[in-house]
Image 1 (cartoon, helix red, strand yellow):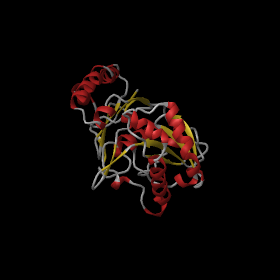
Image 2: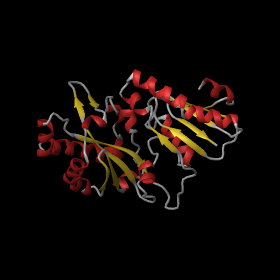
Image 3: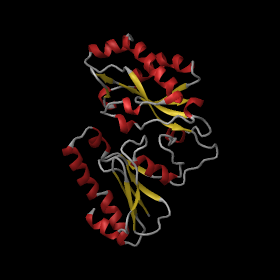
Image 4: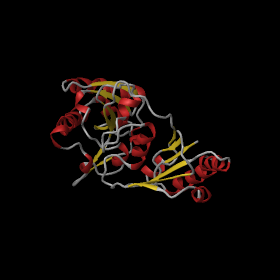
Length: 277
């Protein structure tokens, strides 16, 4: 990494704050593929769900830890949610969403695609902003967010008495007691990504669970593989663009004018790294 940084030009800075709904690594990824940049409205659900022209969001089944003075979001992987359980939860919750004109579509155990006009202009916080943290500051706000907040309250009541959750608790598993909304917005029907980034999550998980040893090991692997590859590209005269992201800001250095993004490493402790030929 030190050798690579020494070969790159003066960095450009994307200045932000740790309070932004969209963290720097998501803003960097959005720029790489040509998405419009608006805080809390990076339409990843519409893009990844193949639903251009519609208002979309990602719905993540969640466990909220309710304390005396606050509520915190458990890491999604702590749920150990399998496909059959996730589909059963979706079926139990669907009709409540339908009353607000929202359809739910199963994609993965921890990710459902929601379609509805409500999500076209509703800013929402990235799941990475709330994992392991108090959620109050990140909740959808104002009149636009009221339907989501109401749905979350209704689902908490429904899920509290759901036999499926009672069975999970009897097996020592966390109950699913709410959900999170992210990736909101819409795309023009004719939108086409400007590039095709390759994404690796090597640093994301250690950062979310604040595991210093795993973080150090992940950095060593990245330095020996992805970073070494970018350095090889620079040595061969190919243009490389590298973006390092923190909680608030990101900095991008380049060895030349990159024509397209080649690699993306999303959500490490100091953010995402993007390289281009």
